Length: 416
Image (cartoon, rainbow, N blue to C red; front, side, top):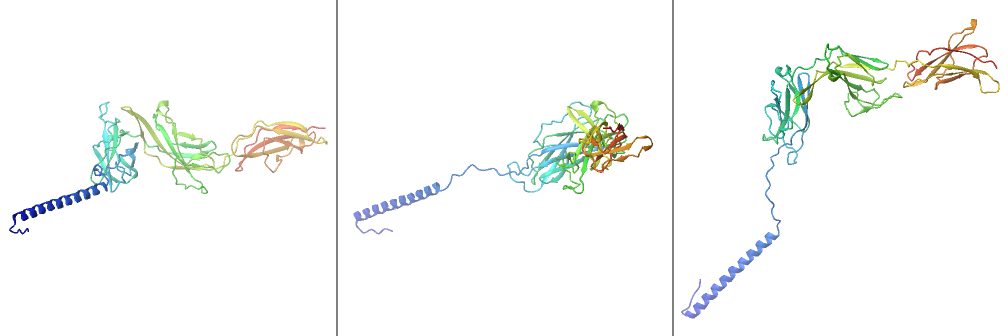
């Protein structure tokens, strides 16, 4: 508060000074405030544009495949590990499987195979899935197992905990209609040329037959006998045998060749010393609205066959004899033998048999050497001059199986 004496001039001057001092104080405080605001602004980064919250939508399913076997369609796909904004999926994911069916009486199909990433309908079933390999089996209703064949389109879409989805996968196709007959009477036996696999033929059908062969590993192999790895191969322990895949598929006949079901085939790739398991399916090919599809029968019973090394080699051919002398100064008589080499695998060598053909002196057959002859030639230096001899040769494999004897050749040992 201001006290003024009874001096008008003095009071006027004091009032003006007070007012000026107040104005200066106000301007001083405003300057400090502006400076403080400037320091705060220059000391912080400029804020970016606001980010929308993540919807946590699982990525769209990839790698979807469909295969018709018997009266079911097996669907396989890969459930992603991340959301559409590349974050790891947190929480359960529900897969919705949709199936669309083309019109039975129309050649044009309502299904749009390119309608990917859009919600699919109608939803056939729902299931909880985890990231990684996923599969489901759709058991077809009775009306879809009857003729005529119709086009089936499948899509899979994933929903998060909030029920949201990024859309459905691209469509994959299968065929409805009756499945091929199951193969009955499947049997297999080992032969020298491979495994003879037989079944009860279906009369009048040109459907192809597929054999699935699995190699059962020998006990001393490093891989378990139950291993199923289509990329793996097994190294044979037998000399002359090539490595082979653990799993192999063989197809017999096809509709294009119009060949009737023969009821059997020879698997020439089977190797001696191995054990194999075989199953079989009939396969029918249909074309629906430009889609080439296969209908497979249910899988047959399993048969197992062991290819034991019990089959002898073929008998040597082309045996010839030439009389001569040993390469020494004594001119000792000798008979040279030669024959066509046996080109089968696992041939260990040959045995030479001889007997005497000299009237009353005829003798029984006798093996000349206790050791196998490694090459397709032999010199007999144990003959006597002027004596007639007969020779035969056999081939022996690494398992000790001996072939039948070759044709006989007869030769008289020369005299000096």
